[in-house]
Length: 265
Image (tube, rainbow, N blue to C red; front, side, top):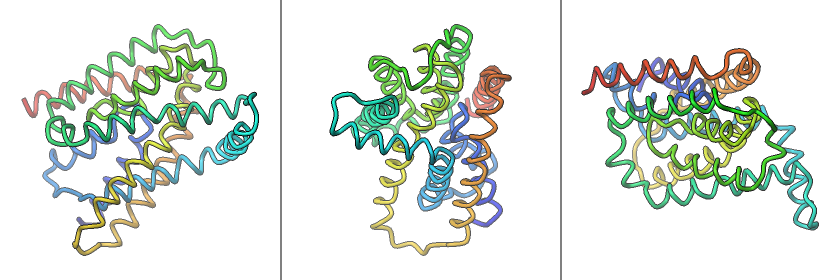
């Protein structure tokens, strides 16, 4: 792949990873629509590490406090809010990991079609709209009950279906559980850290047996551009969320789904 393709796809990954519009769907579809060669597994790993870097840097203070509180909670029976949030992130990742291991091959072979992506884009977009309009927005992520964490965790596993959007489905579930918009988004972003890390590590292990030459310039561009664009995306999304709500993303998903049906069906 050339450097221009690398920049465009990395920018796309950075901007869509944390918005409720599905980064995986865009990375699958854009090369198909513009007839670009497949970007390859190494590039996918690179941009995943870029977005992982962005979310870790953005939430570095929260992660530091959560880590210290979590370690302290191992010695006490009374974890504070930061420790509970750390446990929620850990436990909230388990269903995604289990379902990913069990159904990865099926998803790769059966669900990466444009029609599946279109239906998931439309269906889960409508669900996001319904959750946003009905949301109580009564509490923040630090006061979640364990059954609320469980619902969000199992919802996150649905993100294995291309077109669902990991951030979209976790924000949807968070809103359904009564979280306010920013709390649902923040918890979704914290959940993304182990989720992206698992995906990047898994893809990296698949690269170990490959004997293809590495084009370092596109990979470095991919890491850099995806990291910067993802960081800015997180910042502005949280800043504007209460003002714009979820409707613009719902409209975008519906339009994208309709276009995909028209092009590929």
